[in-house]
Amino acid sequence: MAQDGIRLVNVFTHQGQGGNPCPIVIDAAALQDEDMRAIAARYGHESGFVRPPSGTDSDFTFRFWVPRHEMEMCGHATIGALWCLATAGRLDAEQMRIETRSGPVTGYVENRSSENPSVEISQPVGKVVDLPREQEDDVLATLRISRDDLLGLPIQNAVTSRVKTLIPMKSVAHLQALTTDMALTEKCCESIASTGLYPYAVADRAERRFEARQFPKSSGYPEDAATGIAAAALAFGLLKNDLVPRDSGRITILQGRAMNALSEIRVRIGFADGRPVGCLLGGEVMPADDHAA
Image 1 (tube, rainbow, N blue to C red):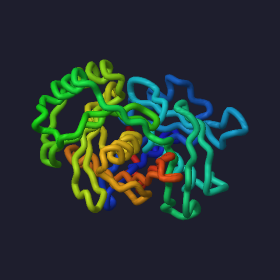
Image 2 (cartoon, one colour):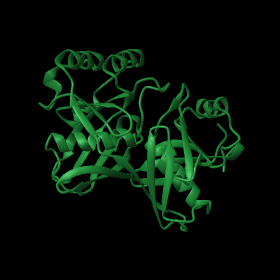
Image 3 (cartoon, one colour):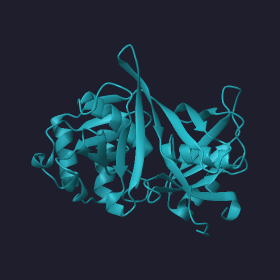
């Protein structure tokens, strides 16, 4: 445990490495907004804060901050916080109701009494909308690429909790060659009503394995090693574009390769009467080396 009751974990690790570092405070009831923002700024990462529920419909309230502002929802911080609660012996059931500013989330924690519990969280059914040509051109200019670099599918805005812009790259090599400018990314995202650019590529279609990168709108850093909410949105984009079958088989999103922090995010889409009704988002969590930020 690091100082000030902050625990640093890596969420969405791949083969015991990588993942997205995430500071978690499981007793954050006394923290003010500026306290939470300052913790995120000190660590330089999206951070999760566990507070008492506001009513009887939830077990916890989770809040999320990046160095510059509060976020309505953060997938990896939610998973990291549930993992920390479980390993601290603070969960009395395998299913938890969580209040977030983007709406209710259900957490599912298996083996909660072990040193390595398994965590998945719910996300609502995704909405996917093709961008008009003018907005597509803006995205291409921001990433300094042309339509020849794309797979031949539309650029789309997709959302489960936060809008992400899905950009279908022709190959993993094309994806990893991308470079961005934070100011241009923020301007582009503002103009297309997105919270981040999420270019992706097919790694192994038969295995439902894809790679992606996340360039956030205004988080205070240029790229994320793992972005659960973006991966959930991507899963519904893959479904709409017929890149995955219409069943609940696991979709694997690898992210963070360009940052030397390869991460693995797992998504399972749920169906009822042949229609998607939501998804479960999960991945591995590991404690990071304790250190003072």
